[in-house]
Image 1 (cartoon, rainbow, N blue to C red):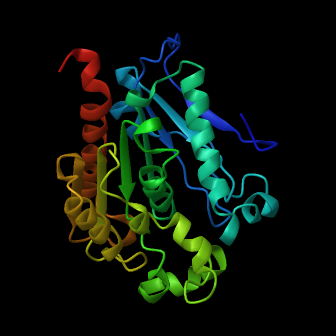
Image 2: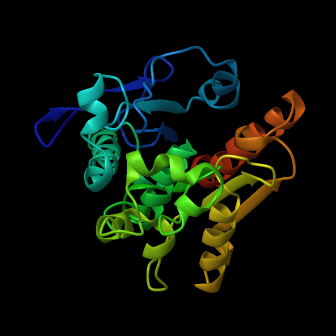
Length: 262
């Protein structure tokens, strides 16, 4: 898929014979930061919870990651951060235009920096319900005005910028907390965090959810805070299984239930 002269790859996994009629519930996953590469891997959890039901799973290799080395990462640093979000939106549009899925059947998921990504998919006017039927936002970074004052946030200013300087002029454009408004109809969102997250403060998730409720978006806003687990969001395999089931149940109900007339 091409975006702004760049070839942005993604991996699509589904059962053989995927119908290209827009009817398939599809989950789009991304990260796009810190030069971290998303490469194909086996996941029994995704297979059992999503793919075996006939749904599709997509992993996007957007700018900000390390898939093509330092250049790919640096293309989405600081004032260029929006390139990562534009790439993710472009992948979503490509899936829709190819008939793999449709906006009401397309969900997105990301955690940590990927939670900032999916938070922007909620708040950006070019995304939201125009592209997505559901959003899963996990242990997210969402308030870019104060991120550097909370826990490990100061160490990320090389990636995002310093909001106490003129950098705020571009940081505010991709701060989901600051870009919500009452007039916009947002897709259903599940936000999860951990009380004991020692990397991304749970205040990010709490503030976004509180603001959505204040804006009257309660019926489409879902929140779960685990009291253990650190930045991983779970302290043991039982909790990890629960958090995974919570996310896939939410996606199943929002994206797939319409297929069954529920």
